[in-house]
Each structure stands twice: as C-alpha cells, then as structure tokens.
Amino acid sequence: MIKKEELVLTDEWDKTFPKSDKADHGKVTFVNRYGITLAADLYIPKDAR
Image 1 (cartoon, rainbow, N blue to C red):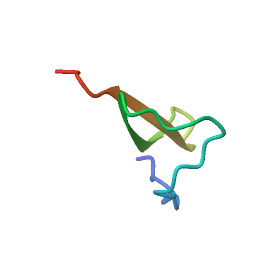
Image 2 (image 1 turned 180 degrees about the horizontal axis):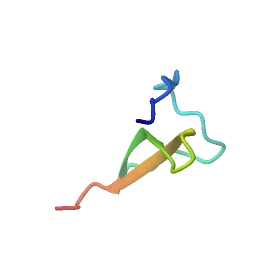
Image 3 (image 1 turned 45 degrees about the vertical axis):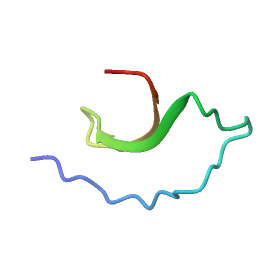
Image 4 (image 1 turned 30 degrees about the horizontal axis):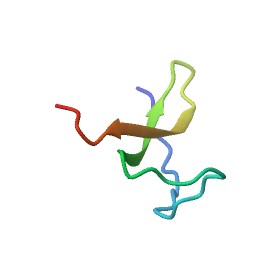
C-alpha cells in the first residue's frame, strides 16, 4: 500500500497573478503511481453545478 506524505500547504494566495472573483480556489494533494505525493491548485468556476 502506498503511504501518503503529509504536505504543509498555505491558505494564503501565493500566485503571481491576481485572484479572480469568478472562480473558487483550493489546494489538493494526491499520490501518483510512483508513490510521490503531489500538490496542485484546483480552480472551480463559481457558477459550476
């Protein structure tokens, strides 16, 4: 079984571009097939269903 590594992610806006009011932003982590824990930014349009 692959063990997920705990990553420390910030809740602050840490991008070089301005934050949009048209999308919600969150951070996600997942383990790839090699067992490496990766972090990514997830953007969802505010009007998504």
